[in-house]
Amino acid sequence: MPPTSTGASFFSTSHTIPRDWTTDRMPALTGTLAVVTGANGGIGLVTARELALAGATVILAVRDPARGDAAARTIDNAVPGARLRVRRLDLADLGSVRDFAAELTAEHDTLDLLVNNAGVMAVPRRLTTADGFELQLGTNHLGHFALTGLLLPALLNAPQPRVVTVSSTLHTLGRIDFDDLHGEHRYSRYGAYGQSKLANLLFTGELDRRATAAGSSLRAIAAHPGYASTNLQLTGQGAVTRAVMACSNALFAVSPRTGARPVLCAATLPDLPGGVFVGPRGLGGYRGSPGVTRPHHRARDQRDAARLWELSADATGVHYDFADRGAPAHGPAGSDRRLED
Image (cartoon, rainbow, N blue to C red; front, side, top):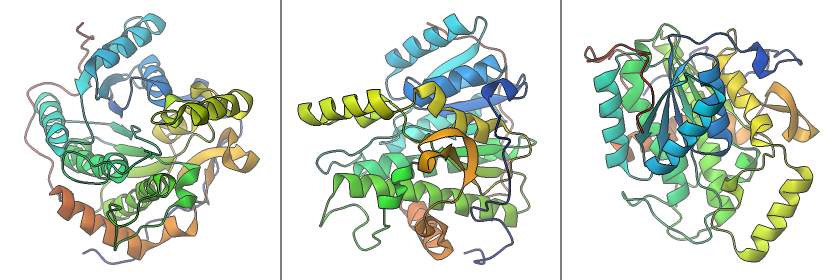
């Protein structure tokens, strides 16, 4: 295990993002390759669209390819000539994660940006993934942990690779229950969701720390959208809860376009260091322009981060090697290939 302190920041708030930052200030991304998980709707769709508008080749990693194709057509209508690919990825199935990574690395030897956005929220009863993990932890954290590790060789081939993992303000509800990580003895829908979002932050901090310790240029950054109106909040809810949340969304929530701004800032702001948490700076983190924020103290616990990392590696069978840059690919990174319907 790497030493517990390397000098890498663990959610530092010393960096300042300009208050007037908007997506209009994103740099040109022509020639870069990005993967966005959960890109078929909500924040993921907006993120993929804005990256494509800036010139990136974007791979829409989605569980349902038909919905992915529909999302790609939506982007293509808004961004004529967008360079897009749709690929199936089910984060609740490590076999699917491995297949996705193998296909991508066979086609591209370099990956510039990975946006770990997909997730499930507040599943009413305990369900498990194909590999037996509690569904929310397995999808939101372990699936992305495995995906990032399997794509690490391609990321390390990029000059300034970046991994952005989307967390939530509800990470404050979470505690990493190392004695019952998968809720086998006690399950709470929001407790499990909070644990998974806390795990996203611990993963980001530990990834950035380990990358820095290895002398890598990879930057790991976390982001959250604030209170954004997306279908994620309504999935799996009862009729009454759905009605109440839909009303709350209409009154208080920001749009997916606004909610995606912190994610896009985290993904593209040139001088943004690794090991920071980007979210709305107003109304307690629920809305406003993107800024660097400090997560709950449990997200800054380096011992828990290191312990969770080792457990995640053992559970998924994915062990990170920062010296491995993989074999040459069969196709150029960032190649200009349009969506195939």
